[in-house]
Amino acid sequence: DKANYRHFMAKEIHEQPEVVGHTLARYLDMGAERVALPAKLPFDFNDIQRISITACGTANYAGYIGKYWFERFARLPVEIDIASEFRYREAPLRKGDLAIFISQSGETADTLAALRYAKEQGLHTLSVVNVPTSTIARESEIVMPTLAGPEIGVASTKAFTCQLTVLAALAVAAGRARGELSEQDETRLVHGLIELPRLMAAALATEHQVERLARDIAKSQDVLYLGRGTSYPLALEGALKLKEISYIHAEGYAAGELKHGPIALIDEKMPVVVIAPYDRVFEKTVSNMQEVAARGGRIILITDAKGAEEATVESLVTIVMPDMDAAFTPLVYAIPAQLLAYHTAVVMGTDVDQPRNLAKSVTVE
Ligand code: M6R
Image (cartoon, rainbow, N blue to C red):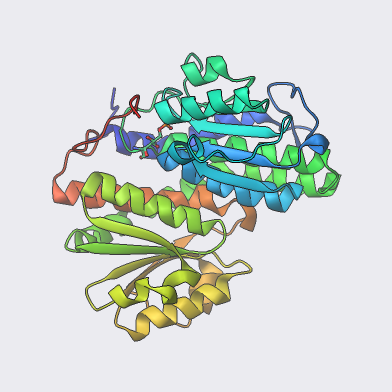
């Protein structure tokens, strides 16, 4: 049931504050301001030397953001893989280490095969899944559910932010267990997480502005998405969303990679979506924006109030996100990226919920 929405995707984008809230309630003790995982872990994070995260598509980008969190909060090295690569590349794995698998459907063939491979190699297997009865959930040693509810639109939206929620809680738990985060750090981070539903609702309020912008984007042939730090995997996700449902060619790049090739593409016709909260890499991203502006590229800047004030570059449009803890910006900045893809597809008149050539669950290799 689409409620009053035109498409499931729109409904699912708007449900995010609520379902992220549900997921948080499952992973946090809100009163005590602590992380409280729903399942007991059969290992100690101190015995883990490396985490490997494996998934496909949007779930892989969630994992990529998770990598930044595990490395920063827990000082644990993380390898992120696309499931179809992980299976065949014969990565050296250490018995007793942790392998995390992320999947909305829990049925993705390559992710499932990667899980079986990791099990055979003697790794602990933990899955972050949205369908609790799925094969991946059944075959994993530990299941960490996302409470997104059924996701119908082929383009993943609410499952993505719920996956991020679970990974954030896990990374904080790992940081505490390994003594890399103090009790105060945990309280600060948990506060940041608890704020997310409110902040995501504020991000949804930019919809009209994004809708106007979409009319312009719909005329483009190519769109570039740039970001640094956790905004880099989010740039990959923004580009995937746009190409999946609007069929406009889009690419995500780490902002610092721009001058190593993609800058050659930039001209007056090229919109460049820059995802840049005012964080410790903001100034670096601004210098990349200057490179785009100098070549006539049309910049769409997604930032916060401080970023909008400090960015010394002319942008076509600036979409202002609420102020927040820098650690968790991907959950909030995902929203304008999803809305931009959605409204562009609506302008183009494509089949938003059932885009051509795509299936909701990819059960073939
Ligand atoms: O069900 P899964 O999370 O395992 O699916 C993985 C990908 O197929 C999926 O995220 C795909 O990339 C989506 N269409 C993205 O919107």
